[in-house]
Image (cartoon, rainbow, N blue to C red):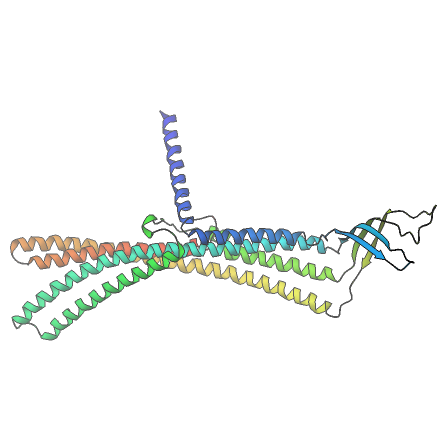
Length: 406
């Protein structure tokens, strides 16, 4: 029995993990096919360009075939042909080759983080629209309850006005309030249409096909470790560091090996029987070179400045990340307090609604008074759901900036 209980717990844990992955896969597929393809192509292009850059220090092998015709010697046209393979490959650049490879890797990772960030921001925009559509739907329900209260308020004020108990300005204000609320309801409908249109530009599917995720607050440590902009700037700093070394190495001694293989016809005008000239032969050697450039010191100094600039940007990004997290965490705390207040108000209205219904049965209150309390109760319940969505929207701002979630 004990083993059975353990198996049940493991099955439940696996189910939770699986459902989380399903949700993540569903949201990662929220983008339209074309937009997803564009990001895939960007990632593939980045990998290929980085691979080419890491091998750019390897010079190509030159293959050449030449056919020559000459009428210089007498009446006979002399033709010769030759095939050559040539190599001119640097093998030492004062550390430049090593740092060039490191530079290409840092550049690849920085560009990769930037592309992933752009993709996640677009996914975040789409998910944010889903939250906003849900929020508008709740606000519409809330406004309908408010309009019901407006109608009751107008009827009560009209009765008091007709009885001479109330000035006409109060009735005018009640009528104006209802008109404003109805206009706001129409504005919400217009906003929902606009959001749907924006969503159609990002996704091939309908908003109703997606379930809203349930986001939780990420720990500050995880946020710092997985923050894509921070990762990108960290790689940018490494990139600038390696580039400074590559720039310095450009103006230091370089060693290259040269080699050439030739397979060609001998010119009959120069070849004599018994000569040691060969049709197949090799030329090889090495060279040491060092450029003397008037701009070398400025170039090296510029690369150092860029290195310091990238390092400073990284420090600034770390501070920004900390401020982002603190601000969103504080805003979530305020929203949680608003939810608590709305929950307390809902309890108050629940009690008032019960009391008012009893008074209606006793003939001391009208059914309209009970309806006002009921509508106010529903409004505060909807407020709790609206604030909860606001909280999710704030959490989404964290999620779209980090990797390995959603």
